[in-house]
Image (cartoon, rainbow, N blue to C red):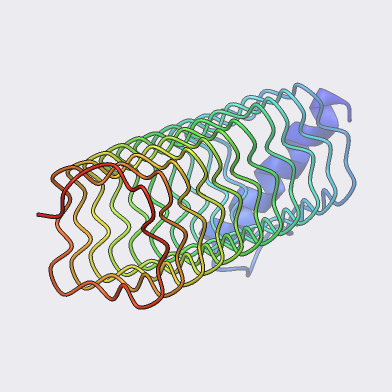
Length: 242
């Protein structure tokens, strides 16, 4: 898309938002080619970006709150500090994207590809990651309270000091995942795979570990007070319960 046309569209969209939808017009960027576009601090709240090509775009500090980005190509996008609260990101491809400190609270990321994505310090509270690919993602100190991670692939992901209080990880794959010092209070790990996961000094109080695979997991100094371990696989676990 030509830059001049894009700028006019962004101006009209900003007016639409600022006037409470009484003036201007909403940005229709469905299937738009925004490859490597400079959208720093752009106001794209509630914009239609379905299946848009945003590969390599600069969206630092952009406002994408409640935007529709279903099936969008967001590979290599810089979304540091961006506001994606409540956005529809179902099936979007974030491979290689930087979402450090981004706000994705309540966002829909079902089936999204977040392989190797940087989500350090991101606000992911209440986000829906059901069936999402988070293989090798960096979620260092991310806020995942109440998030839905059912059937998600978190294999070899880094969740150091992440807050997963009350999160649903039923059936999730956490093979060799780093959960060192993570807050897992009341988290649901029912039938999840935690084979060889690092759970040292993690807070697993009142966590549901029904039929969870903890074979080879490192649980040294983990707090499992009142945790439900019915039918969990603890064969050859490494460590002692707190």
